[in-house]
Image (cartoon, rainbow over all chains, first blue to last red; front, side, top):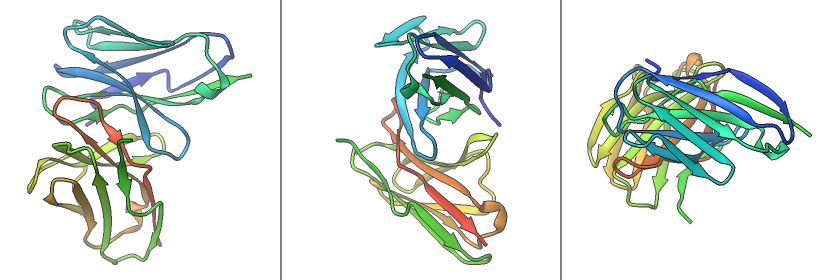
Length: 110
Length: 111
């Protein structure tokens, strides 16, 4: 069963705008991770946030985690056409297993 | 540079064939994973291994088996390939409670 579910399924924005993607999950976690996938390729790890953290930044990425609501959000600020990709959240359900959601397809228009 | 290498980028097999997908990592990671990815379904975990010779079923293990004889290598085996196993297969490795590193994927077509 899918542990994480991203929302929205697809998002289209103009360059320079911010993109926000959300992830909801079902069970308790040790950490939550966000990944990016360019079309037809493997996934690239973006950021990991531990269950005792509420917010984390990495460059133009900002991730928040609300364990009481079992949800996380990924914000990409000042988006670029090169940010066009699918974005996935993954949770570990307190094991080492990484379970992924269905992803958000982000399209950034120049 | 850390690496997860999948042996084939594209593979075409016939129904009923035995198929081996190989994955090698050079990071000394304990955990290795096999996923399949289908449009609209995201990544679904087939099998997971947390140590040599140790394995755990994921969400969709039916029709698949795995082998991990050495820490760096995790093989996915389709005992008798079927058309519904046509998919993108992704291998990943991770340290215990850490970021996952993915291979480039194998697009398998079963005819």
